[in-house]
Length: 239
Image (cartoon, helix red, strand yellow):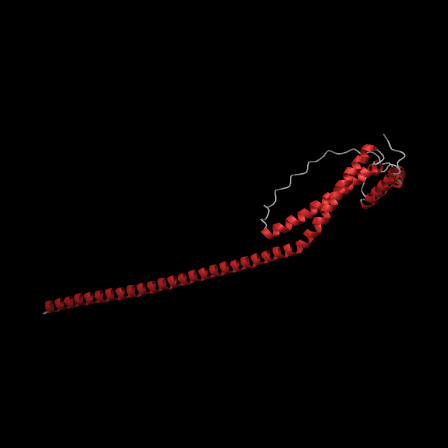
């Protein structure tokens, strides 16, 4: 049964209309149908209907074929968070979830309040009002505390990140210095090998020249002996 005589219903309708009007003003892109569904007798609904009726009707245009969007390539794997960074992320996620729940409860309450002239909707209004109260209470009890913790968690996360950065930079410098030392030692070893090779080649050259000189001297001595023998034979024959 409808309770037309109840003084609560006009006040509920007016409150619903005001609340919906405020939500629409905060969200300029909301559709006319949504306003008139929630508050069909509000001034805003009447004004929006008049505004829509005054707009020129756009001619229908042929819609082209729908082109499927190419699939996005898979991105790089997510970076593993430190314990401190994960704590910051968890707190921020909790705040966002509670804020979203609070917003959803407010919207549900506003929607139910807009239909409060019907008995089932009155029940829904009471239910969503209690839900809104619970969400608001949890928000008030939790979000400020989490927000107060957030700076210290962020400071801890940043401190760990700075420490890790310092350690990684020092490690990179150490690895680079060790690589430079190894390269220097290798270059020195190569120089020593090159010098030893050059020294050995020089010694071989000297030995070869000495051998050639010795062979030349032996040949000269043999030639001298042959000549002396020939001269002696010639002298003996002449006698």
